[in-house]
Length: 239
Ligand SMILES: Nc1nc2c(ncn2[C@@H]2O[C@H](COP(=O)(O)OP(=O)(O)OP(=O)(O)O)[C@@H](O)[C@H]2O)c(=O)[nH]1
Ligand SMILES: [Mg+2]
View 1 (cartoon, rainbow, N blue to C red):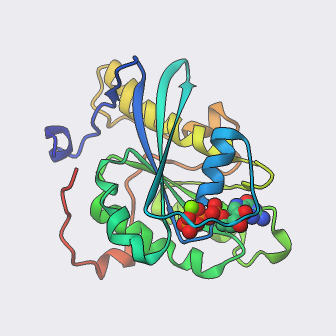
View 2 (cartoon, protein in one colour; view 1 turned 30 degrees about the vertical axis):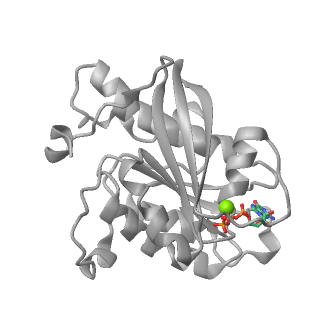
View 3 (cartoon, rainbow, N blue to C red; view 1 turned 120 degrees about the vertical axis):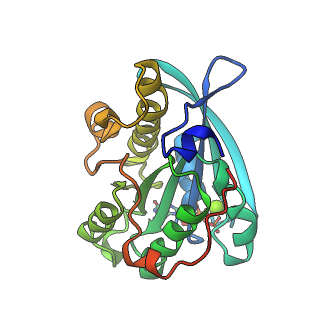
């Protein structure tokens, strides 16, 4: 653990070999909620109705410019199936951000968000940012999780929220850019400005720049509420 983390302060982002900052984003959430589809829509602007479940972890990277700054987004697309959980959670310790996804037409996938949050809190660096993503918003007729429920849960955790559709593409870029912007402001700008990462300037990054409809204060600490009370696993410190 770095000295910044010991002091509860964000670490500066790592600079890669090609002059781009490296941002490690992890896709997490139940199987079939659309993690791989979101990555493919974002990276290649494609979509398939065929379901090929992810085995272990897939990887892609994508170069983007966030507010003029080159960033290499490393997209780690983890398997949602329970049998891969111990493997995939090993990746949490080096994450800069999480896209925690559920399917708006699948209630259990929403109910399991609390468990995913607990895993993130247990294993991920405290300065990582999280976006809660209700995917398959095109399936409005089959919707079982309301927009309000999603927003409210995100608010409880103090994370940003988007409803997306990998099928139509709606909000997919906004979601990835929103999360990346939040990370950039907290983990680059505040260091360049000579700050220590504790100022409020990183919050709600996506709303100003990318026109997010559902964004919230993303840089607040994750509040696990009641879920944390039952958690007795010590922090792994794997970062
Ligand atoms: N209607 C609709 N279907 C979607 C959407 N996103 C994904 N799907 C479908 O949902 C199924 C599962 O999608 P995946 O992206 O493979 O799900 P996953 O979360 O990666 O699943 P695992 O790899 O098993 O964890 C596929 O049949 C997709 O076509 C969406 O936004 N709308
Ligand atoms: Mg997948």
